Image (cartoon, rainbow, N blue to C red):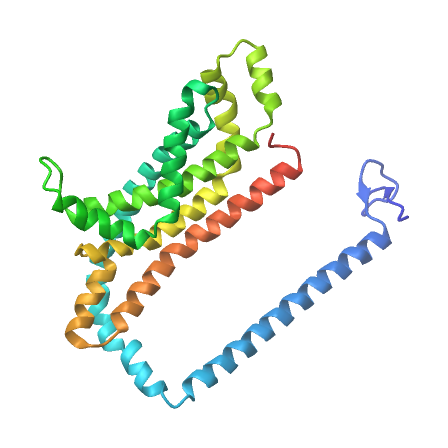
Length: 297
């Protein structure tokens, strides 16, 4: 075993200073060298892969036509301002629908975890809701809500495609989020409830102050993943005629028969998704570290 002796590197006789042993210094130097070698190998392999893909794609027989149809600089410059204007609708849908989805999903999860026979009808309704909308494809839900609700001609019910499309997104995603919340609630050990009740807390206060805070912390990463998916699916409201980023690209494509606007819209969505994805990864890694260190119950 390496021996680590006290002493000052600049004054060997002075006590109180830490001096790593020669073996530890050599071990740390070896780890740094291996990390630099691994980074260099990864960079070189990535560069070689990129170069090979570039030559395979650009040397293919149909590349000139594909470049003009999907990667035209002229149509990209024309589409970018209009696609950005439509993107504002997608951002608003993400914020409003995301808040509604979290609230409704939490209510459904709490309803499904209520105990006692008196709450059976509420549990059954919440279960039927989640089962139905998790099984129903989102595109069908959008079509049914956007075109079916106005056909009923109900007084006071809007026919705005943006509002109806947002409602369809909320109905579908709240079912998925409810299951995420329910998994978090059920992951809290029963001893937490028992301890809270032994201290005199009611069932409602136990759920509010003991169970839900732990449950929400545990399911933050999957919740963020659902919000990333919601951000992408806001583009589906274009089927109702709402002029978002996707529909703005479709209008330009319908006039020019060039698909570059779709590529521009797709790249913008990717640019929005990547920061949210990296933030989700960071939250997940931090949660795992805290759980490993015993910082999370």
